[in-house]
Image 1 (cartoon, rainbow, N blue to C red):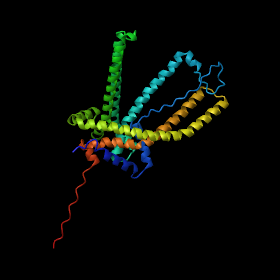
Image 2: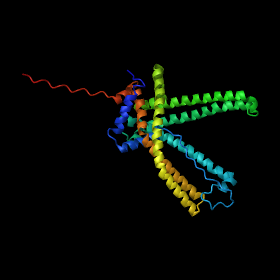
Image 3: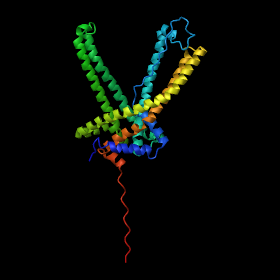
Image 4: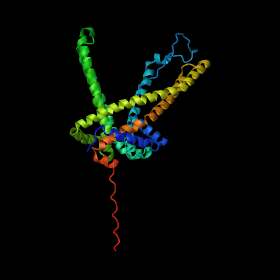
Length: 355
């Protein structure tokens, strides 16, 4: 009989404990952190690092360390600024597509790592490129459709309000603006929830079908839809339980991550202060070299913090895929046979000697 979403928690915890601690292997922990980060299992935090350097009003401020005056050529030449922004936008889109492709393959590598209790990145990459490409197409199309739908959802009400002249004299149309804004907010929230559910269902229940039967994401959703209609309550409880577990994990891992970050940032901050004082004594200012150096150092620090956060999040990286696998295995025979293979038949006993 299919186990419930609550019953799947215990085997998922046991699986996580066995895979990570029995025995503990640092290399496996490291690989799972890398795969989990690229597969999108690492929870995002709301930590923002901002710093402000007081600006100077002196016309010749080059003697001040790291003068915050923006290079004059950017302000004087809008075309130069545009020539820098447009390539950055194109580069950002290219990086997004690249990481989406990597994410698609890593999702299957993570699935194999949980099922086999071993993480092999190179072999998994070679083995799962075909499945990953199919999943990449699905994710890319879903992203484009979602972006277009979101733009329509926001744009059509704004065009209607603009056509009615509500923005010309907003004080005379406070009631429709407030009511329309609330309705629009509810629609946006509903849209985000639906999109999140589709994403979770795809990676938890469609990816295993794609991995085990080499089918497309569309065919996997067609089969999943049959299961959803037959057991609406069970899958609804699964979504609720996963949200609750994700919140609990985010709180626990967030507290640990903040503590570790504070411990690590103290010496980093000390080095930063020493660098600022040394640069001030040397008469450094904002220029191409110092900006490039600051960007490189910032990227190194950010990469180190992401690495630490990924290592801390490895238990969650293993638990949540295991939770979905154990829940779905009771409803998907191919996955159940992989988790609990039928033991081979015992060889027949030799005949007893006569006499």
